[in-house]
Image (cartoon, rainbow, N blue to C red; front, side, top):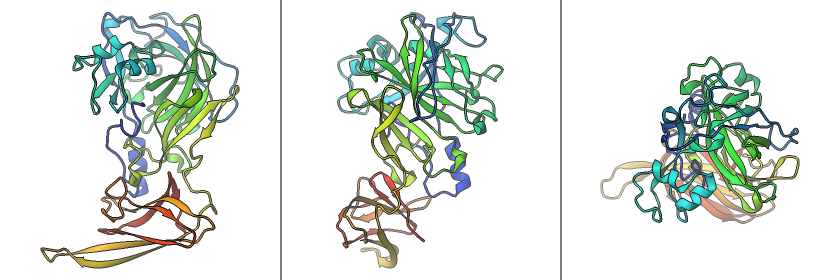
Length: 410
């Protein structure tokens, strides 16, 4: 399971209905900087090479490589001593089916490395659902490699801070030449998973690489093939996180995590909001899982929604809102109840309709309620049928169909 997917991310974030200026500011600050721990002196840090890639769903160039770097060969690059090196870590919240051996196999870490980073685990055969485990990504060979990073969009590169070209990583993070060596200027590996994307019997490394340029964050999912000499070459780019100021309603503002998909595919968890709040909380934006596979030239999407918005003309709903005052039994106090009525005026039935009222503190759904207190659901709506949901308060009507936004006309 991904260390930063919806059940595994720290829960703080941005309500969907905040004013645009606040939304962009919080989106810009949404990507959490890497935490660090001291690297155990007994753990050697390998030096290797990495190369990234280009825009998603477009043919990639010939795999690129960079010369293998030796410790001290590049300024502020590879660690001079293992004992003083810091390693990027991430937190994994244990879910049903997780095992230490499975986490080790997923990431490429050893069970001993996981146990050393988690002294609270006294029985390697026993971890419990809800346990929080530290995953020392920075101990992986790829985390102390020279990575050839692709150029960034103009609006990012113009700010400075984000590294590109051949960049030497140390324990999972890197700083551009002349940067202040503060997390604000850093580039880091946020998550990794091993997948045999080209079905040759050897696992490749899928990585989320993040950058923090002044304000805001830029991230991309890249795939690398280990080389016999200990370096890496790029296979391609899976998806790129957009710069939040783009204001594109279809832009991926946040890559939340990565997972293995079936048959050597990659599942990428994405959202159209920049906060680190986990995806199932619909009131903060639209969260999706999109699956990508390698076709021999590029990574192309094979499953999942391709847009955050319901395609125009695919569904036609008529939505009305009414309000009334009701008295609370027992104390006689009054409160506002909002009823949202949805009529399916389209040509086909509609499933999985979610409704909430957007505001800073969204009102509670009075029924029928879904998985979240603030979200009402209509599981199935036949052609020509009508359904109503009720809320204990005011707010602007927001509608999702599955994992896509429905644009309400007018």
